[in-house]
Amino acid sequence: MALRFFTDHCISNFIIKTLQDAGNEVFRLRDYISKDSDDRIVISKAQELDSILISLNGDFADIVSYPPANFNGIISLQVKNHPEVIPPLITRLNDYLCSYPSMNHYKGKLFVVEVHRIRIQE
Image 1 (tube, rainbow, N blue to C red):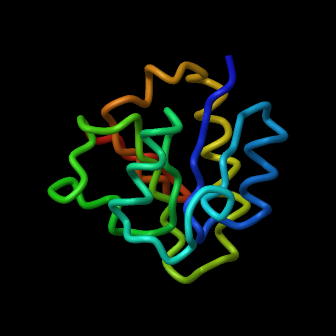
Image 2 (image 1 turned 90 degrees about the horizontal axis):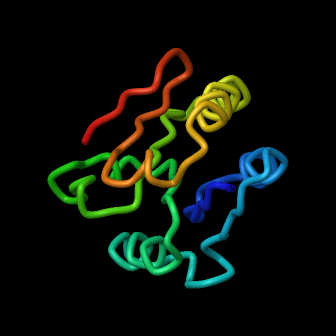
């Protein structure tokens, strides 16, 4: 069973293609809602599509505003204005996704993906 992702407007085509090439289903924000939609609308659309939200927007890593238990999973990619880290960061994420291919594993969790680690918060 493939994982389903809803990618925020800031997610590059490289990341989307990498996720798709690994056999995952990827819904792009721009195909569903306006790219300048409020964060609440973005995460609501991810829920509606029964998908894991993936974003570079640090706002979604705020567990007070977006309690992980309320969502199907949030993946926050930590690039911090260093786009050169995207390839190794995506390799780390892809390895993790391959190890945990069930949507249930991501439900109710926040994954903060950095080049050298993935932090998980429930």
